[in-house]
Image 1 (spheres, rainbow, N blue to C red):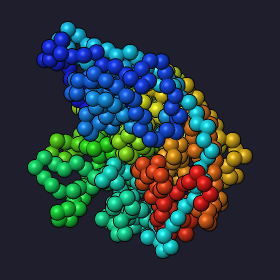
Image 2: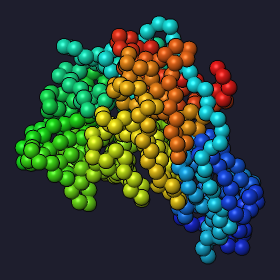
Image 3: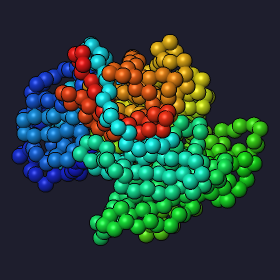
Image 4: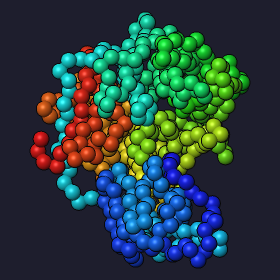
Length: 512
């Protein structure tokens, strides 16, 4: 149902049973109701006999809590249940029920069935607006974080590679970078379609109000090490030492005939990276491709020995990529991952820092066996839209649900809808008028394509208004601005010339 409800789930109540009425839905009172998969305005249901702070909402039999202030799922008052919806929903059905707790046990309302169907609305008109002057120059882009700590990274390669980081400023990219750091020995991970670099703003250390950015990058060939550096950006700038988080001397690779590290990802004080460790370099075996999990020490001074993210049986874990959470507006709270080179999942961390992999209950293959890069959008009610880019098969979308009774499906975007050119960077993910949205860059070979999904179908729109948007790499700021009455999502476009242009992606149900 999406990570982090932000509400309490009371285990019991001291209220006398006779004082707690049976909660009820009033409109609709019984039966089912329909919402479109692209619905991005709240769904309101009239309720009665709610005991505030006690009555909980059950979605598909699992508690969503009392939906008090700060909940990412909705609000429950004495006369209204409001469900927050951001579009990108999975087709299928969900059950809703209210439960008030008493010493004698819970008192339940009747159950409602929510049917999520494909929309009948016309597709939006889409265009871009860019600032006239370049903001920077570089060779690759990255984006990460959650509001207010969203980062845009500009990577410059060459003999002395560098990374410049911009923070989000009132819904736009800041004019000047907050820091610049060198990347000595940096080597990109070509198959990932993105730079072998990660960056996040760390939560403040206990007793500190300082802001620290952690940068991790892949160093050496063929990915000999992942190194990190912590940089204080306030109250006083300070550059920390370069430290090795994991390298090929680790026990993890002791018996491998061939080993290489891939692109790093940062989840708080944990670093994860895909790796290849083959006992027989000529013959592949399940489990050769895996993920290293490295914890930071409690005082943030060093890295522990890397461990393999475990699976119940030998199984390849690969195709790591970003995951955008719409309810949390976070790019970096979880990581896209493929299991057994066929099934998509999400990798997250438990409260104790353990690496957990979740996958839909029904196995849906998405570009099985082919080298792939995954990008995931997670939405309300356990919905996931996963884009898989493969070098020789273009792009496919999987529409998945992890709650209720979803209609999981995988769709390959027809080749004749896409340019006869190679995608040059990781897709940029967002939401636009409730549609899941992925931007595909092709450099100067073709304008960026926008792939929209509605839970069942895909639509491909070239971004050519008011002029063709040609990008070597493109990123979208984690934002719900695409669901506003006047949709606008901040973007950054790195042109083949190396110029960085910033602007917005806009949409309308009428001609622009």
